[in-house]
Length: 584
Ligand SMILES: Cc1ncc(C[n+]2csc(CCOP(=O)(O)OP(=O)(O)O)c2C)c(N)n1
Ligand SMILES: [Mg+2]
Image (cartoon, rainbow, N blue to C red):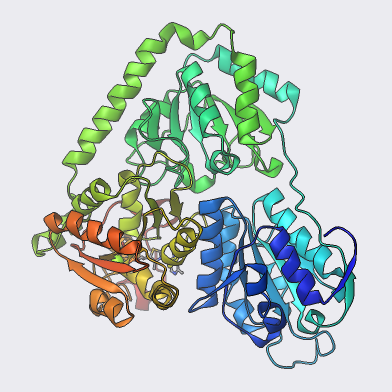
């Protein structure tokens, strides 16, 4: 539809959604956008009604991360829209191309303090890549299309803000075709320098980031790693950025990551950081290893030029698409003499040896060994979290998608999640909000209904997010939620143990039976107390997914706790006033 045509603004919006390939919109119904909602079915768009708008934006995020297409959500002006805030911030840091549509109070009453009024642009200004405001109904199609284009161009949330009276009227509109701008491989001189460094490297290592997943660069990354004989580490929480079964895959860096990856990168003389901003939290010391190779030459490749050299000093920065860059580097390195060829065999066997050592350490590491953990585990009949995570990993069906929440057990799970296919792991990324994993997985499942889907969620975070079981039951979205019931906000309790002499406040949870709650919601609920019950329970739950049935597996685990998140950011308490002297 390229010639201007008479239509209503609602039709212009819905036609634009259609032209952008939108088939699902998550949200809660509201009078503000009913005129557009009414014609969704005729445009082949399924409206997925949710329990809370935070669920809608998380679902849009999961949908986008699983499919590589836009995730879309919509809410009532005012409170519906403000409920989006946390999810938009999470999607921003997950580099997720979501378009969230925010009908606003009517243009003729804006500023008068009427019903459901708040300024909706400033709230999101720091957590969006683009904010489109329809300032005249005639511009509905143009501005809506720009939101879709920018979300994909900049890989992040775009807001489409529409005064609610602008859904009505008669306009002449042209529906734009999607504008997809390829980024290419970037500056030729930078590529030459990078190839020069890699050719001269005696111990090159690759860090595979989320940008590699977004660019669909797996095959090129494999070819590059094989040519160089370079170990490949996943950047933090992107365990699906390189196939784990590949001989050169070393596992994830960062919190609760792989010691093999850390030991290998520590010895690198050249690091190729492919599609990663090298976020500050992702390379913190771990397992007592301060592994970042400060003396190494770092080549950083990112689709956002502002990320180059931002966190770590670099030798070469390449503003480009990870796939195009990997291909360009391959081209430049082919047939060239590689300094690393001299010790290739030795390095490959070192990769294998470090991996084997880490695997055997992990298999023997069935429980935590600090005094607090030993004490609580001794008085518990439940499973150790680590052995449970091991059994879960073994039971996961091939090609599973797994989302992980923020919490101690979810973090420890990082050691027990390996993937062979990109777009398989959906961790709460740098925004780190509890309550992320379940709704995000629901969105991923809507995008990929044939892939088995599992959310790992702590019992505290489950309290924030379990309302979306309503959505699963109503909309027949079949996923499996693995709730780790340790009756505590464990990750924070760990700080009370390590820094506040076990003065517990607000960290102990008295849970209902989460399995019974699930059943009351119309889902399945199973309590698992023994390791041997994990695989059969997981298999049954996975089968139920194909019938659109969601299952909660409530895992009864001890209260033991792994290494803390933010040891880097906490200090021992120091008190100056007499009344607080005991609080040290
Ligand atoms: C929305 C939100 N509120 C609070 C926090 C702080 N926080 C981080 S981890 C955590 C505890 C998580 O507890 P749980 O989900 O039970 O998992 P566990 O640590 O016990 O494995 C909390 C409260 C957060 N990250 N996000
Ligand atoms: Mg807990």
